[in-house]
Image (cartoon, helix red, strand yellow):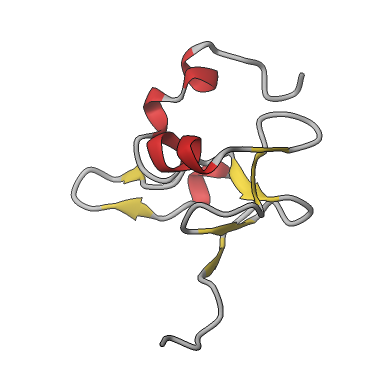
Length: 88
């Protein structure tokens, strides 16, 4: 059994500071995914701690949504595709 703590990935304050996936240079994790209260951190697997930071305050996202969009194919996220204002 792995006794290491969960994988927390610190990122910069700006979405472009997120790590990129080779070879395309596009972020792997949605730039708006973050921990509630610590939006520059994200758990790199579906977690109750992850939240969508496009809204104020950040709102929790379901495990299914995180798996389908936030942690890989976020460009297809319905909220992003709808062009919702992150400051709204």
